Length: 517
Image (cartoon, rainbow, N blue to C red; front, top):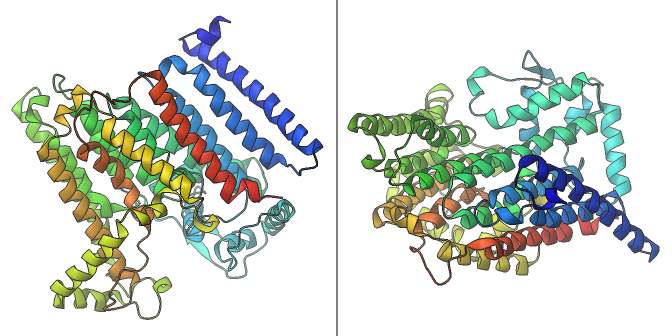
């Protein structure tokens, strides 16, 4: 059984194939035994046990990598969990703003970027009832209903068009659009296309974060812990563009931290391009995070071969930040104007009047914003971006508390001597300033577009908007190396990853899989 102890890619591939077969046998045996005891089981429960078993066995396959290359088991387990979650949600509408995100995907799913909505599309986009079905029979009936509606002329006569002008903003939806187009060519049913196209998000999220984690010399457990927040994995399993923002911004920060951890190595053109590019690509759907690009200015001049290269890099950073800023400032303020605001915020929302209120009462608005952020950033409210599953609700508080403890442990101890260039007071100050500026911009954008004029709070500012900031804050703000408790080695890395995955499976069981019947 050399492949089981092997280090080569073919040997690990064989080991993973055997692990998958063993997981298949375990899942089949377990559900069979449970069924024989009189408990109802289904393909969802079988898939849950299969995914859980394979994730556990993958730790054995990659056990030699846990100390220095934990990203390998991270990739395997994250892919399995998010893909299973995505498939298990089936045609259930479990996520935020499905109508918008499905439309973004549909706009680019044809060669001419034009799509006339049929009744199946309308049923997804204009459905008033967002109740999540937990009866498997009703889930199947909903899938059959959508399949029957496909191809029937829409009642609203709506035609959507993917504008090239919006390509950057909707870049996160394009991979699913390509897959949806391919699945349509194969003649697959609507429900099958709807479910399979969503898998792209899980794959992109897992793979992009794998490359980000691989670049780090230290802080890999901080990175993995944040990436494995249940809300992060839920977002990556549903129709959304937040998965894209979270993955690429975290990876951009990881490339930056990796450069700071290698003070004796010169930053190559490729590495500089990947660092800045990750931020730029990731911020397409949500350009409001543009201040974070300036974190790249932390790369010291000594990391470049010449002073000219250093100046060009800093010019590129500023240029990238301006590009992202203008990508939403020009359409918002120049092309279409601020408008009247998001109608979902209520009839009292008026963006123009809200801007006038802010400019006329800057001190009062500063107080409103600071009061809101104090609550928004409080520890109790962190459940909203750690263990919240949108329409599925929250999982048990003990899971949230356990994740907070793992987060605190890794943030305080996952350090090494190479972090001397990361945890400097200069870096900490810049992270705090840019994070604060970003949060103020996020809150202000929601105050203008979603909140009643002169309201004393901010409406519509979802906790998940904090997620792109979490890794940067933890990795820079934490203390320097704590030698006594540094979580290095196979056992500690394995325990942290296993704990986070176990908490995710427990959460998914509580809010969804365990409720299916």
